[in-house]
Amino acid sequence: MSKLRIFKKYPSVFWVSNIIELFERYAWYGFYMGFGLFLVGSKETGAMGFSPVEKGAIMGTGSMLLYFLPILTGAIADRIGYKRVLLLSFLIYASGFYMIQHFSSYEMVFVSFVWICVGGAFFKPIISAMISKTTNEETASIGFGIFYMMVNIGGFIGPFVAGVVLGKGWNFVFMLSIVAIAINFLITLLFFKEPRQEKKAGSLLASIIQPFKNIFITLINWRYALFLMIMSVFWAAFNQLYYTFPNFVDDWVNTATIYRGIHSVFPGLAALVDTGHGTISAVTLSSMDSFFIIAFQIAVSAFVMRFRPLNAMMGGIFVLAAGLFLMFAFQSGWIVLLGILVFGLGEMSSSPKFTEYVGSIAPEDKKALYMGSSFLAIALGHRIAGHLSGAPYEKVADKLFLLKAEVAKRGLSVPEIGDSFTKTDYFNEAARQMNMNQQQLTDFLWNNYNPQSIWIIFSSLALSAVVLLFLYDKFILPKKK
Image 1 (cartoon, helix red, strand yellow):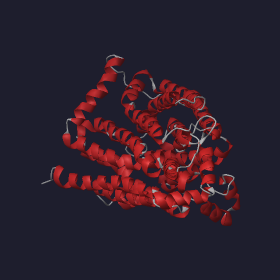
Image 2 (cartoon, one colour):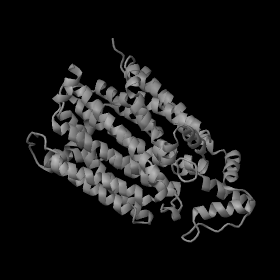
Image 3 (cartoon, one colour):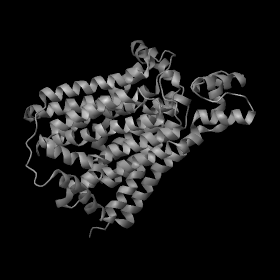
Image 4 (tube, helix red, strand yellow):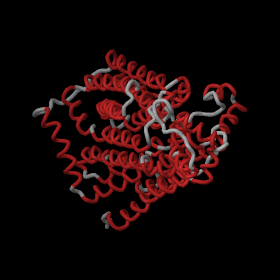
């Protein structure tokens, strides 16, 4: 009974904040998990038809700002009020989701995504602060557990539903995100109560400048700065789940085997996730990462709590590297799904321990400063991830790039891609001239150009983080006497 009574100790605004978090994550991941496909997909599907380099620049820059700007937006929210900033965030979000589907030029799509990320940056520091403000020493552990469960429920349902409606057009994906944000706007307007805030001294400008001073205070600790640099390598590998994995699945992986397996046991579920071609979309498949976290996070957390945070991180990142190998080295849908599970187990072991470790090494009087600056590693990791998903990925594993190389090698005459001749047209015409169907063409490129070797880059990046953390622990950290 005592465990049940603790739920009554949370104020109503705690539950309101968690519901808001769920819908925001639904809107974000429903859009973000398939964003790479939207950017490079063929134009007749409603996608943009950009190159992987352009995709990497857009996603890397915007996502970097999403994790860097909360240093400023959190200070603004403390001054003008959480409710006002939440409403502003949702207006920016909704307008950004609307804009991005109505522009076709690289520059305007870039601006639209950055605008969406600005909305996310206003939102990001508020709800976690609300959970902190509405819990105490007794209720914080379960309170943050509920919060992270809401994050992953939204992170699973959003892309799962997006993958289901994707066959009807990209506009449905964006519309669902807009609807989720509109629901949040109404919930905030009607039910969100402003927390008690201490009156801040000084001007708004001073409040904005102060976070930069705080960052400087933490980064002059060279050991901590080095740790953040090492962890940015981990985040660069981790973020390939969003940047390249959906594209890799869409180009190379046979998800028909998973569809047939599901259909043999749950025909109704198979009909729900069917793309119309007896396959499962890359976006729906990618959503399984959050599903596995929902299912196994408590068990994994219980297992890794016996290890030092740094050791748990190293072990988790090593497992994550194995997951990247399984995700990017095979065409079999079932092996790729196993890879997502292994990746997720590594994520569950390492990602939460990152926050715990930062809290453990921070001086007692500077814990908040260190926790705030820890997002710099995630921001830098996104920028590196964007670069890797551009030219390196394109030259090793992008299906169109490899096909163009084969067309040139054979001296075939295939028109250049343009407004009237799409990527799909290019694949169809090249396959016709090579006397192959699309599956034969995919298998030919797989066997002759080895796009699966991209796993070496991504797994090596994760393993590099493990080695660097080991050396950091052995030679850089001061030894306790």
